[in-house]
Length: 182
Image 1 (cartoon, rainbow, N blue to C red):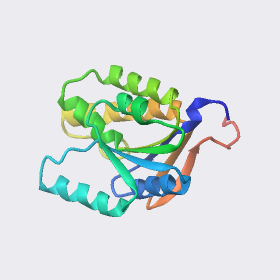
Image 2 (tube, rainbow, N blue to C red):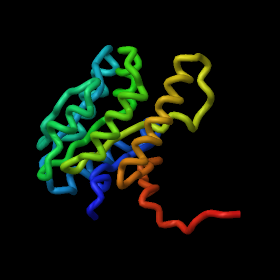
Image 3 (cartoon, rainbow, N blue to C red):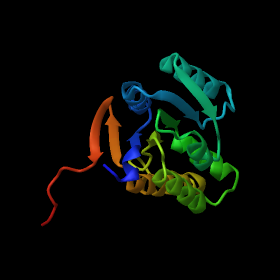
Image 4 (cartoon, rainbow, N blue to C red):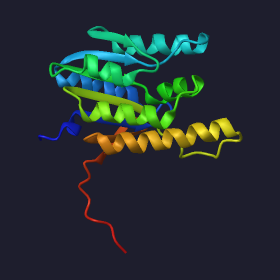
């Protein structure tokens, strides 16, 4: 496929859905050098434990790049034909941007531009947060809405979109379904 967008894969799912494990397995099966792009910040003991669990789950054979805000820059620097990048996760990245009072639309556009120019494979993990109850405060609602927009933008530029529920992957894109009509 000559379309550069085919190089991006978006893996969506809820909390503890198995999306990170699935994305790691995709990277392993690629046979390419593996680069883990960590967006999380260990701001408390619980997060430190989560990060440690992810490191253990991944095992050896990964080079880690920690980046909390400049994902577009990482994609441009690290994206090579002989490697696969695994960005885990867009949800934490979005949170970092919100806490830094960054322009979310501009940062999303910058990331999508970088995805469309990828020189190698990249897997993005992101939470689907809009399928539950309506959050009870404005900040949480703003985050939910921003995450939904980011997921839509990324799904548009990625060649594959996979939804993971209960550890089971469902291919959303490319879509093989017939056109839906009334």
